[in-house]
Image (cartoon, rainbow over all chains, first blue to last red; front, top):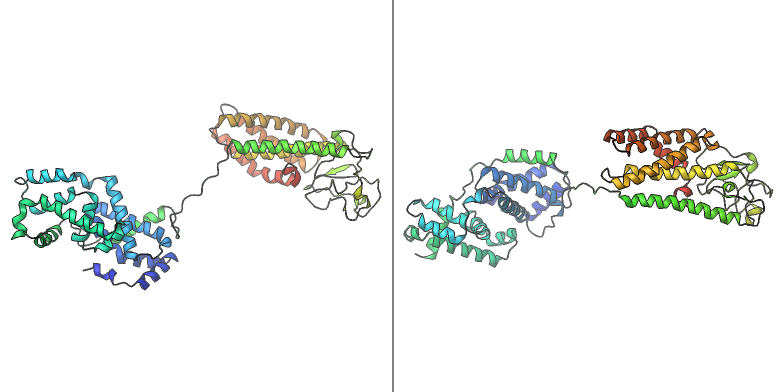
Length: 191
Length: 285
């Protein structure tokens, strides 16, 4: 998986890369971009569900990162720092546009919709997508990052600026709500 | 229905949730990033994007400050005049019109402002201790320095005595000219920094400009206007003041202001004004 590539980078490499970027090395900027763009884009796409929005958020993430990299203190890894920017850009962008979250509704409403449309929408994936969309932003973000994109709770907590325990709690809550909403598909996972 | 089964089922099924394309559009996004960075604010490493420097807004406070400085200049001049006139020397100037100008060297009945190139006569040599020489002493010497400084307090035997001046009508003109030029500089500075939406300030500036225009024309008709260096400056200043009076009157257009700016730039009015004004007078002292 491509995600592993950047994770193997040592902090020394990151430090050197940052130093070169700060010094105005265009090749270093491109190297930083190439190293992290895939994961940033994938996360943005997962959360936005739209290629155009995902591109916008990814571009904004790197533009902001290049602007602020001089103030990067190395208190976290470069990857974590970039993801925190990417997550902030994406969530703020989604709040503004609300183009993708048109289907979003409160969790209780999601439950009722799930049960009411059981017969009309038997497709599991579509039901699951609706259920995930109906989660609140914090639950949905943690769920997508952990269960869909494979981030660890440590990475999620640093990127979102929340404690690890909170990240785990959010994931538990998200799963619980999804379980309720997908109760009529129980035979699928029981079997 | 175990928890583990549900988690596995959830993770597996959720992989199709908003599934991103296999090919990440790296090149397109990189090109867009470069374009946006080139078009947007310059990247500043070290925190934050470069924001435009805050524009210094000159408000009516500056105008009031300039007016206060002009008043202070006049008051200081009067104060110096009275102080000088109260000295024990009977030959001191009897009237304010005959007082020397601060920053102006009086020599042989001719006043020379710092910045002008009129050379001092040889008779004003600082080494000449003759008491009745028409030389300004240390108290009256120019603060702007230069070759026209009349006396050196450390070498002049008269340094402990009050200045002895021959009344000269020219010195009064010099004083008036300096005040006028100082005020003109303050006016032009205020005019250039004024807000076009501030009608109250425009009215004040218009009144001020008319007064200065009148004074400038009087100076042009006076002996000061005969100075070959000062006369062109006064003439250019007159032109600018006329334009300002017209521009501040109703019915003027924005192009009028550009015309004034062009006139000032072409003729280097501000630079010449600041050169002609002695440092002491400029500070209102």
